[in-house]
Length: 81
Length: 255
Image 1 (cartoon, rainbow over the protein chains, first blue to last red):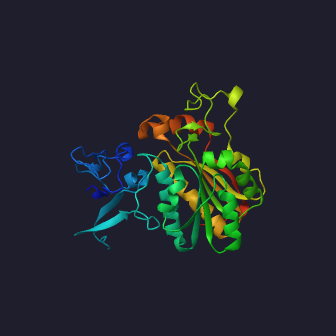
Image 2: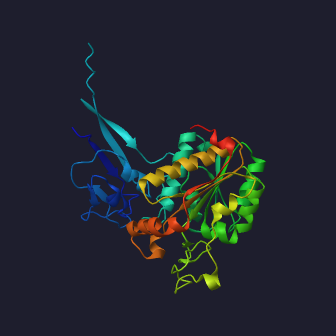
Image 3: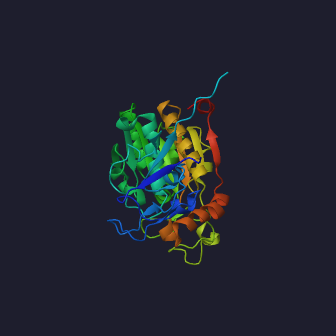
């Protein structure tokens, strides 16, 4: 099963520059046109499943607006002998 | 059973203030990398930054460290004084190309020549961002700016100054590299370089500078994504990335 992650984009910091959208390897980020931040930008959000929590969006974000989480799936202990 | 796990969050060395930079400006990335490095090295409480004149003039609002605002171009001179009076502090300057490569050229060259034990973060975005995109010493030949509307003519306006190459010839310099902020890989390499620059200072191995190729979407008249492509296609050929000077003692540092 693919790794599952999710991001939280801060309304305070996001300026809708779209750099995370072009950088996302899974192409799951877009601007949320239904929402405006207090500064008047459309913030980024994930619009479909598929985020792996790779944090590349956070690496390229110029405003440190993205917090990234990843689910840890408990790995079965390998069978020995 | 699954448990949520934090992968990345805003660095602690940042204050809560949102930056005043234009959307997509890589000044924010450079700030974030410096903050992450200060967090990793746990030196935030004994760091003193020196802000320039230029777009980064409000840097003191964004870092949770002590900060001084220097007159235009004089950040290395001011940082020299701070570092000599308080040698146990980590002192860094954060300067743009108008500040460092134009009016502050004398200060940076002499601070480097004296081998002052401080770290310089140099943002090269090929124009004067704050005042409206005028031609800077680092503007590429043929590049249109508000003060070179027909493109920079090297016959009358000279050639771009390659600061890293120039400073690497000085004996006082311990670490001098150029990195870019245009894609995730290069951002990670830039962070590593900034870490090495601060390690150079903490160990007292001489002057350290990291030049970062940056974007200016507003004054270049491009979208943030296109301006990243411009850096890759036009700025990197003119300003090759690489290690221009890494002294032998610094090569031994393992982080």
